[in-house]
Image (cartoon, rainbow, N blue to C red):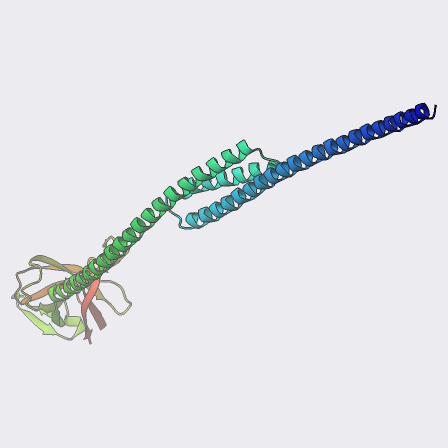
Length: 308
């Protein structure tokens, strides 16, 4: 009896220990399983965070590189070459890519790869454009140097031409002055004509029937030869033009009223020239008469005569 009771108690105790051990084992196993799951989850989250951080850094790095490209294009555009318009287009491409990347909050790995490819292409394009800009800048510099040299030559040639023109004008002026005729010995005398035809000088108004005016042309070997026409203007005391009293215009808004003309065939040698003004009445009235000599519209001499 005692033995049977003892065995029952032992079996009961053993059963309790078994149940307790099974529960503890299940609990421990459950805890370990949960721990492994949480650990695995944490590792996965950390890996995802690391990947996300790397993509964010890659995105920032690409944006920084693009910003440097943009600044490089600004510098290239300032060179003001024939590529400036193309450079502006390339710069806008850089800016557009920067806007696209900034708008991408969580870019994928594939997008990062694509952005890097586009960045590489833009870098290659910039390198090519910079080389071309340097080439054009060098050509422009050479061209400017050539233009400056040409300007110097043209300036020197212009200075020489101006000097030649000045000398030519001076020579022409000298020749013109030298070729002008010079006159002197301007005279006016009153004449009385005898029945015999002989003419006598007089200073008496009642005897004066005509006025004879004369002058001398000096010799000039370089003056134009041939027929020369001169105009004589005789004015009385009232400033009236005596004689033909004709008006002639010279086409430059200048005109002359003359009394008569005289002509001479000038051949470069000295020549005496004279002309006669006949009185319209029996004699000239008393007073002073003024005589002007003209070569076209230019007066070249004058004289006067007073009749008593």
